[in-house]
Image 1 (cartoon, one colour):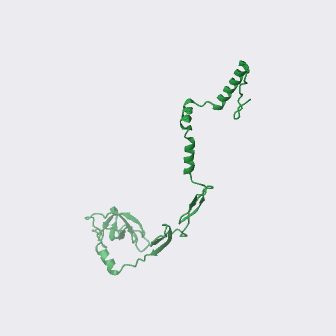
Image 2: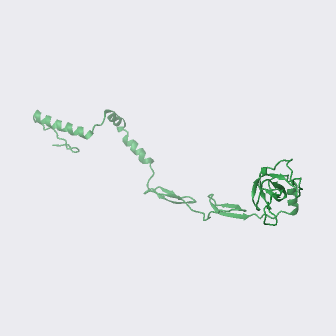
Length: 228
């Protein structure tokens, strides 16, 4: 005969000692295989919770959410459903406003938001900059100091040679000038020193009658604009 669950041999009543020994040894071997090396500590753990296992299972069962429980997507969301399968909650697209990339004097003036804080509208505006009035120009230039950026000056360009309009030069090569000179006097003055910064030639130097380059001092005198 054998046991119902594991088919272990039951010793034969009235059988010999050898028969009993063979059957018991087979049963112990089968039991050892079944347990598969479970440690004593693991048996102790099972023994401690075994009597309470059903109570714990009942608690877990009562606390779990039933598959009929439903997740509803709130305002501004889509998706949801019951727990019979995996569900996804997505952020609803409640705006069709495209990107705005302004430049120059056009800027973003208004931004409209919906209930959820989504941008639903962007308004732009352009600023017009009117030309300054004569009074404004006079007021601004009245405060300009000698040699300042944006100011003009009449200078002698030392060693300029032939130079065309828009040529640039360091202020260290310039000296304050007048529009005349004599055979014994220069048409410029070095006593106040050279101006600072970089200047742009607004005329030309070194020309006579538009064809010949000369070295006369007054041909190296012109109007310059300080650009930096």
